[in-house]
Length: 563
Image (cartoon, rainbow, N blue to C red; front, side, top):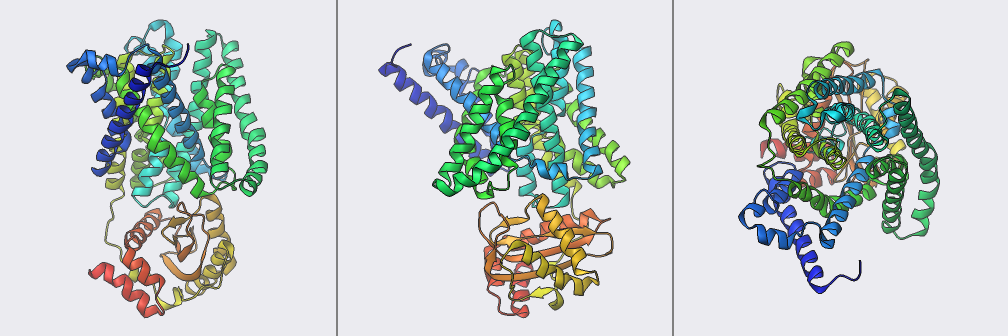
């Protein structure tokens, strides 16, 4: 195609600056009002796309974003790179080992959370295929709608749980595990849809072969490539500069598996997602490295991608209120019905059921990406794509306030009521995570009357599922035990600091061991939330870490309650 002309370089760089700048400004603005930044980024695309700028000044819009020109193709390629990296980051969030270690209740919630919305989507696509696209694509439409209504936005849910101080709780792990399984199965199903479109296969035998190929690819990545990562990553960390070497390895791996997935008939983004799962599952990948990759993608490539979504279609001309209402209603009804049914089998109280329904309705970026790929392959029309985008935005916005409503504290919890001298360690001797849990368990044994080994192994087992390092030099190891009927709290101060694999990479100087009754999940949620509220105050945190006695420690906490 030749070298870019001076005018193409000017227009290309200016268009990228406009897209990224407007997306970041509006993304930050929406963050300020407690809404996900992706909504502001999509809205930026709507403003500079055919919906607004294209209507007000179509000549200028065509000059700045010349459809069909080489520059526009380059922008499209950057948007594709953005979505590949987004799926890579989403895969990194999937802790496969922790999912495999979960009990029966998680699997039941996960299967219901997929099966009921998927069935409703299949039925919707079968009865009304013309609402989504051509009736000739009925099978692909059915599978797409089922997948789109059942998939859950893992990154969005993780962010919501962090904001609500519930990320490290058992409840948070339950919702995260459900989302992990939903995403994994959802993308496997959708990769089958893509291959059906590629091959035109509608016969059961061909569909079975397509499913077999998808599962074989997934197994190869999760077994062979995952093993390679586990052996290779320590060498990379030892022989390359940190964190550049690891980041380069993660991105190159994602791009390679993306190209491989595309080459064998799947979509590139499925390869990126599977690469993320395989890499994220190794214990050698530090939380700090994950955070750096996440910031890199979410501050550069994510805004470019979501702004391009808003620029892709005319949101006024293609708005179908009936279809949008149906999709939003079916998603919400399906997720809550799934949570209610699974909760009935697991004998979970209504508040937790409704909270799980609230957490899993968020479709977020995953739903938007799914819709975009379906649009590109001609499975759905632009009306349906816009309805999918609106559904993703609405469910993402609703998830956090609904969670807050259902998890609202029944009474005010005062941390001071749980801390006494018997549960206070002035100067912890432990220097490793394992030794820290042992030291805390020994002290908790005196308070609870339980054997120290029993406490130690239950807390360590929970810690191996997901790190309880909060960041800000704090860690909250915890466990729920059937032998106790009230909560117990043990706190230790470590002068040297203990590595709890916190997202910010800082060692924990304040370590709180939380033990709550197995039958009362709400109590653990309340204690974690209250501890976070108290100790995210920098003054309280500094004074308690430097406390030279139990009295001074309590006095520092009292200042938070009394002002």
